[in-house]
Length: 97
Image (cartoon, rainbow, N blue to C red):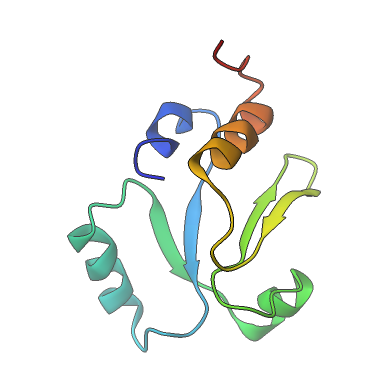
């Protein structure tokens, strides 16, 4: 993801959201910096997880500008090729040929 996201950073907002492994948001931010994440990190509350129907760890969701979920993958799913396609769709970028 670190290789893909920066290419679309000006067109697509990307956030890594923790679902409860971190007690403290400062620790989560420090972890993101240690991992050299180029994106923002945050925490989701129970209501957000419920609204997005997140029931398993490592759920990946892409939401378009209209608030519609256009991509969903579970634990161990979502290849670099998949994410490149998702970011291209969300940004309106023509796929590389």
